[in-house]
Image (cartoon, rainbow, N blue to C red):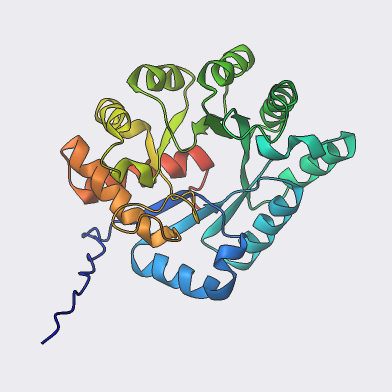
Length: 276
């Protein structure tokens, strides 16, 4: 008789004691979710991910993020232009960005920053518009959502020159080491941990998570990208953030419930979600 190999599905960890989580960075407007958007939200809610920040990366996606936030009580939006897309920015763009930020469902400015891996826009242009958007976010008293890919020193140079940041901010999809984490924390920012933390070879991130105080951490999917183990390589979605939370709990030697509780408190503080 021919043997068949059955893949064992690993159960999603779910925190007890009514603990809930907030996905602080997801791209719900992307086409990857178009076919089953409502089911994605239902699965998130069932897993205890009760609120999601959907993130703008250009003018069009910022508009879509706001539209999604208008339709669902547990969804909030950010507005901003990603470093990949800054070549499209002009004076009229900044006027529209300012207007979009006035929407009551907008809770942060971003994702903005520098990306030296793909270099879809010239570095000089990335720096110019990162600095300008940081200034706009400060003027509007919105927390920053910062993208940093292989650009640690230049990102920090711009942020440190522009500080302080009364509204705070977050280093999204953190990819640095413990030394870099300390620099980010000195700005008064939170550090956001993605599904990459579940990867066996992410040893530098593991060490950083061990050192960063839980009171300074938030969690994210960056969906539809960067699905955690055991779903690596598939589409990411908010419910899978539970695997990320479980790994953070393991690294810090605390319970999943404690990670859920504290990171939710942190996200509520960062995005001003108290009573919303």
